[in-house]
Image (cartoon, rainbow, N blue to C red):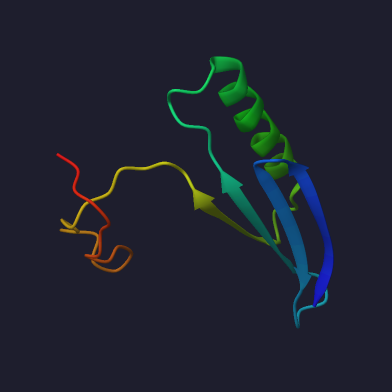
Amino acid sequence: MLVCWEAVSPRIVAAKFATNQKKIKVSITQCYTPTNDAEENKKEEFYSALQDLLNKERRKDITIIMGDFNAMIGSDNTSYEKVMGKHVFGRYE
């Protein structure tokens, strides 16, 4: 069940959900990270806001951070088979 949500910034939204364990909640944070080409102050603002949000989380709660972190990926998932598929859009060299 959704307990609350917050639009932290245009690039970060967070939601908190209740679980079957009354004292434990699940927090999900969706991010859209600025690219390396972005101005330094924009990147600093983003990471500062994300860190501030994470600092508010209780240690016993489950925290999931997901989103577009502008990572470059490829089809070589050697040693990462359990967490990374072989699907890729485009080609990076």
